[in-house]
Amino acid sequence: MFPHATGAATVPTTAAKCAKPREPDESRTKPADPRTVLLGQLTEGMRAALAAGDVEAARIAHETIGRLLGASGAGAGVVVDLAAERSRRGG
Image (cartoon, rainbow, N blue to C red; front, side):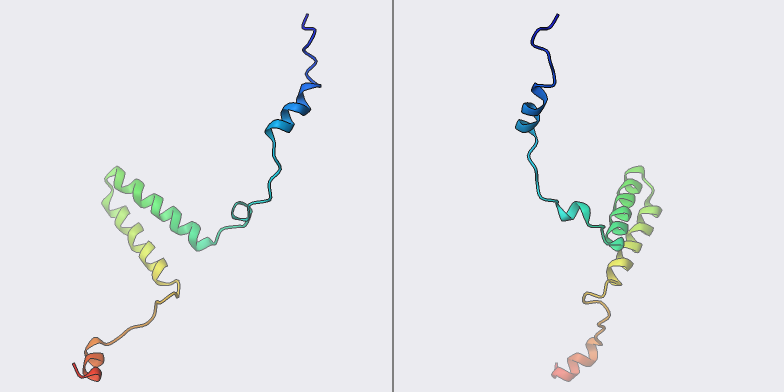
């Protein structure tokens, strides 16, 4: 019927042309930081709430995102009494 349709002979040559081995991508195999995952989920939830017109749910998601970002420790926790600092500097 199909004299040239053996199939098996063409598979290795087709695969060799298409498939190129790559080094593993650590960003795809390394588990994400739970805080980062949660921030992404909250951001998407806030977007969906706004699209649906649910301002209260969006507000809660926004507040929670702010609390998570503020609790990260990077620059957070430093409170300055501006009046005391101004008088210390003579201003």
